Length: 407
Image (tube, rainbow, N blue to C red; front, top):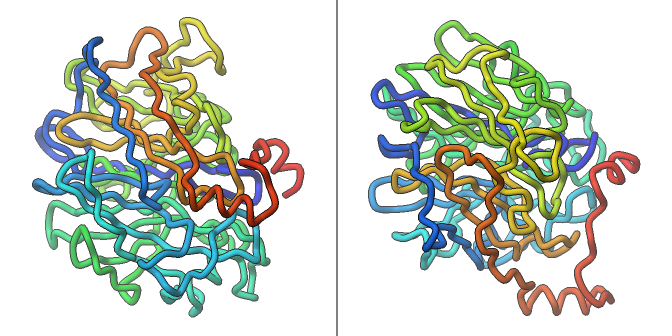
């Protein structure tokens, strides 16, 4: 959920795709990443309430699920953060990244454990991450409240078996003109993560500049990074091997938040994305493109599926409204691919209470699909916060265009 000075979520998600030799699949997945379409008589969606973890990722390791996300409000997990994070409010605080665990996707989920707090040192600028994320380092950035987003845990399945937390630092790109993708080494899927063992990945081509988001798909000893760029197009960069890159995937524009999975029935890779790009938006569709080659390179190799009817920019939207949420990437869980959707609260102060919805994916459908939507209500604490702020209800966030105009 990378956000830039050019507009809310203008830069979308960076996907690291890591390619396992045989069978093809996505990080944290079983061999059967391609999912069959859901049966009509069941509601295969899952909605996770009550966790202050957002714009993140869920992986499965053995019998345990790990839910990573950005934290928006102070709680018992991080006493260093004393007020909620509000995007582009330089007076607010960035509250860090956390992880929660469960034995079932339906919970119960543990209280989040902090992986990177607002006081964790950012050794790139020798100041706490809150200063880097909020633009208060005093060197290149300006106080802007941009934040940091999209924590992704990547497990290298060869060599040293290293666990690495990847995430976005928008100010590092927008103002310091350096790659805004960081990685920090962790002891395991639940951490702890050692900020002294950090690095800024170096690569060239498609995702080298202005790249956002994270997700990984692997093959052999290489990995492919998918990203959204500052001009709201999609790109990819091979992180190992020949370092092949491609830009303008599928010729798509005004999109973000790429996700990737392999459909074994279709025998093709599937690329999902937010259609269109939009920060904290309600009712943003999920677009699809497919790629039948195994090397996942080439900007002309992605075939964008046509929209057979309905709103959008011409490409197929599997879920045209995502129950009032915004798609953010693909999780492979229990052998099934899910689109992770942030059901944003639609307030500038209440995103900590926003649920996360998992929409099952299979063969890209021929027509738009909308599963039954959950009841999304603000919590009692959020309503009390609203009263304290002197408002009667949720405050709608500005549209992407409105926010860009004020940037």
